[in-house]
Length: 81
Image 1: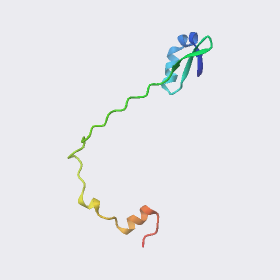
Image 2: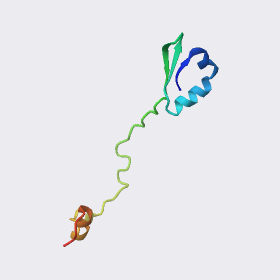
Image 3: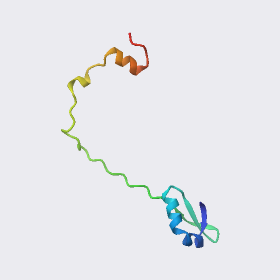
C-alpha cells in the first residue's frame, strides 16, 4: 500500500494490519509527512536446547567405514571403475 494519511489509517486500521502481517510495510503520514511505520513482527526464535537427543540416537559402527567405490563414484558424478 505504501503511504497512508493518518485519517485513512484510522478508518482502515484492520485492513492495514492484515497487509502488514502479510509482509507489506505501510508508512503513516500526517499532513503528508511520514510519522510512523507499520511493519510485521518477526517471530521470536526458539532457543535450542543442547543435549535434547542425547542417548536417543545410535550410530552404527559401520557409519565411519569408507564408502564402496561405486557409491563414492555416484556421489562424485563419475563412472565407477
